[in-house]
Image 1: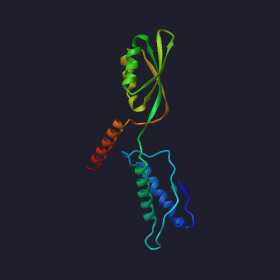
Image 2: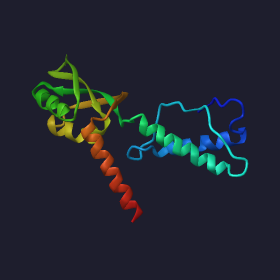
Image 3: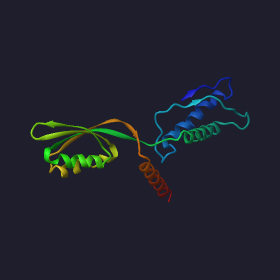
Image 4: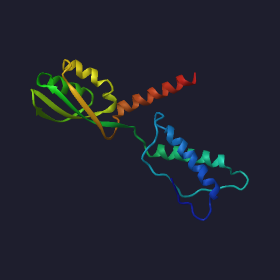
Length: 177
């Protein structure tokens, strides 16, 4: 949060209230209720009224301004992408690669390993890996191993993003009842 207000158009005592409104809005975002991350907000202008202005009014104004700016920026949902390394027996290689592809994975390479095994290196969305241990054991008859580490974030494909937004809205409506 950067305060670039000049000339006292907003009294200093109201600047933290505007920031608080923005910070609270960041936590729930505007796209499906997910937090907004990796951004910079700059307050550069505004006005106040000696009678009607209050800290609460500036908190609300900060929140509303942030929501409006966010909608205009066309935000997207991001998901964590994991670098996954799978050790699999040669006879299960095709099944494991097929399974990774079905999980929206992108196979980066396959390297021969000792003992008739192969190492598959793939980039896979974290959401697709939540139950992978059981699936890999099934595909490899208990002979497969894997490890994964966070690599970066990528935009969620639009058809899945829409589904997530609808799901979150339904959950929020259920919480209200």
